[in-house]
Length: 535
Ligand code: BGC
Image (cartoon, rainbow, N blue to C red; front, side, top):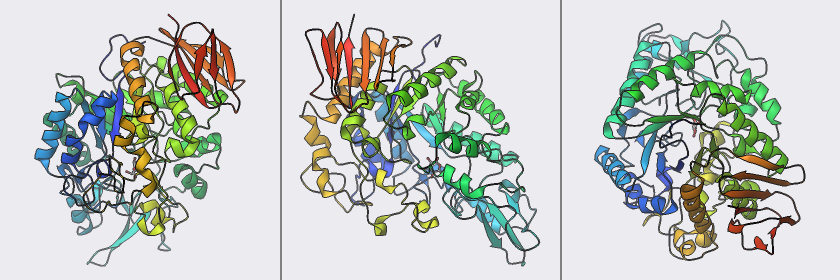
């Protein structure tokens, strides 16, 4: 149990992918004023906070996760005044604001990298990154593979004729920073303070497990396997993936924790509740708790549900073990069904099951993250290869389709694409069939996914928050998962046939219209969930 409840302990945090939320100036890309003008949507959903994916100065080779100036707003999104106005409006609407911080790498367009490549090998400018000489046969310093495919090293030749390789765990346009270098640490402290001084309430830390590297010159024993694990190859068992991740010499090293202890001191120096959530893919999962020890960060993402099958027994395992392990460090759980890096939940499980899963998860203790469009039940869009922009698509030569399908702009209103998102041509095409998903067409339909989320968030806020722990009743063996929490009994049927459950109480919410409670019996069709008020 959390002793005092800070705002983030059971918050619902809505992730906004700025490029795809709302375009206010007709250039086909979403922007900060577009977000500001549509924050009422987030408020009416019932979220407590927004998390903004990067909007910083960037050549945009990796959707803005290639940052050229972490304290500047990219002109495609607006300017600093727009950021200030957004934060102000969000706070007026009682929405806290988290922004992304991307400490593992900069863009190759960052001034430091430009300086590094025009400086000599061994210079102070190069020491901010990981520059190494080639092996004697001219090949890269080790066999590491980029998470986006291809080698993790690119060679730079300077005018004086010397050639060195630099490390990039992602695209070659994202050189990894050397966290043993003092300049790096102090620049990030400056960045954190910059956004906190502007009024944000916290951060989502990108690749939080990757900052400290060890054994940089040593080969990995299975680079191909590791790169499949990193790219979330869905054919791979989670055990196999986990073991490969744990063997990566650049992930989850002890050195990252000193960085977060330091950052925590900065957060605590502000006279408001500042929090940070770590993106940390680690194995075994219990290692995630190390990021949320008392003097480190407040939350760490749990990614199990992003890759979990729709299977009650499996869900029981991952939910119960997550709750158990976080209880030991007194940190709240986090739940996410979709984000900008993985196929959307409606595409993974279909519309019916994804509504059921959402309803079930929204009753859990801890914090829930909702990725923009998830509340509309958006699936991934089918895109032509010519529309794709994800560097993973290019670096794997099309073998991996990449993440663009989950990043298509939001449909807001109207009968035709681009459904009110932009007066111009959207940066990724919005399918013509998305009319039924638009906010305006779901607004008035009581059975829409949007209204299911709204109802769930309202009940959650008023009656689940603060209700404490869960008591498991059915643990998934027969496709049924259920628990009691506070005033409610919560059910999920992941099976393919309906289940009838004797129950007392009244149906507070069902994931679809076929969920019924009459004469003391709850009818739970295949792939559905229910909240029953029992007290
Ligand atoms: C972000 C991705 C990004 C990568 C490199 C991730 O974890 O969520 O979108 O491509 O970090 O910054």
